[in-house]
Amino acid sequence: MASRLRPLAPALRILPRSASAAISSASAARRSLSLKSFFTSRKPESKDAAFTSRFEPVLEQADLFHPLSKSPLAPVRTKAEWINAHGSCPVCKEHDHPEHKNSKRPVFECPDCGYPTHCSEEHYKADKEHHKHVCGILREVNEDEHDLRSGRRMKEFEFPGAQHRDEAVNLSNWDTFLYTRGFLSMNSERSMRHVSHVLTYPLTIGSVLHQSSPYQLGKDLTVEGLKSLAALRHTLHPAMLPGITQNQDLRSTATHTVRIFCLGARAESHLPPHIYMQLAYLFPSTAFQIHFVGPDAIPPHTKSKEPHQHVHYEQMTFVYDSSRYESYHAEAGPFNPYYDVFFLFSPGLSHPATKEMWKPTLPLLLDTKCAIFGTGFDEKDVMNDVNEIENSGFELDWLMKPRENAFRSLKHEINMTDVRQSAQCNWGIWGIRGRRYDVKPSDQ
Ligand SMILES: [Zn+2]
Ligand SMILES: [Zn+2]
Image 1 (cartoon, rainbow, N blue to C red):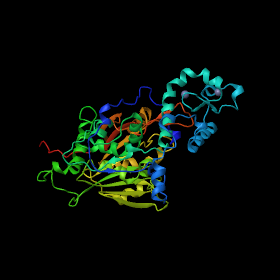
Image 2 (cartoon, protein in one colour):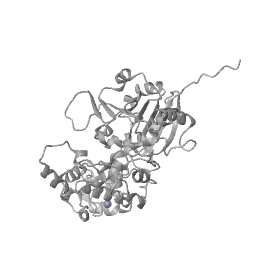
Image 3 (tube, protein in one colour):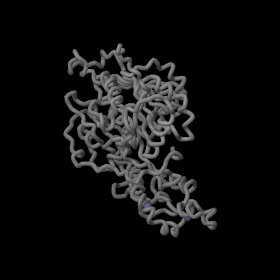
Image 4 (cartoon, protein in one colour):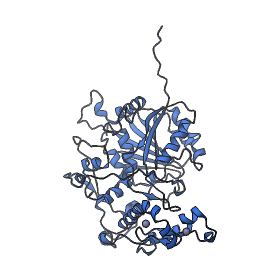
């Protein structure tokens, strides 16, 4: 992943959040979970020990900034060592001074962001004008990382349960979604970054498919895009079907399940299933199958090496398959544009490391005539994939023009081999579909 990071477009800024999202009167049932469950497998421990260790902070909120090498947290110190060993000093790199041939590693830590940025204080000072453009982001990442491991009770991860059928969700952006869904304790940009980082996958999917999608015809969606989404929404919002009332619970009687195929799945397959319930809650009448396919598609909290695994969770079924997509495709077919949709999260269609892997897959996907959506971690990454598609020569229609994703992760991921570069998970989004030739009545 780190090797695929490239510089972020300078215009990108984190959205300011409205104060209104901090207040919520929702009284929906809440699912309490510890932060540990996101990052570690569960270990048996006594109830008392679990309670005290969860809520006894090791770091206070006023004590979240530490130079990486002096952090009280071992994983952060390890990160500093990794950057020391694999990073490079930008000043040495640029000028390639002969005297720095063997001293290019960044060991000097910027006092403002705590990251090892340069080989020496001298080079740091010489480069300060450039460094100040990324210093703020690095400082933010530094403090966020210490906060995540601070041991405080992470109230922002206590997600709301199912919504009432009459409650409308506003999917314009993170602020309106979190507010209208009744997320509590979203009272800082830091909380927003933590939560958006976890929810970007289910919400990227949900915000595209939902009838209240922020992506509209003419602005982001093409006519073909609206046709494809109308087909899927016909299945996802069965209340829109004639003869079915709003109050009928179709979960037990649903004859169809919407299948979401996440290909080349990596981080999205490692999220605990309950995170994807936030997608399911947007479509209370629909059963889902989420298929994670690819060599890195591994269920969370498992030691099993089984190449094909299922997990059932309320109205969702998760399938994890580590085979190559070409072989999976034959088993999973036939496909239907009303029930099936593909998501390619940061696929790297044009990247040398992954380009060949996608070559046999794309024609298969286009042949299904199902909608295909993709994301990228910055503008350049998105446009590289878009250009690759345009130059592929395949017959296809654009469903969604490439644009910023309203539900991208607000957290910046730092490229550890060059800390001047950062990216945001699912920064941008696009959509395509294999071209359909509608049969028209003959004029004769
Ligand atoms: Zn240097
Ligand atoms: Zn700095």
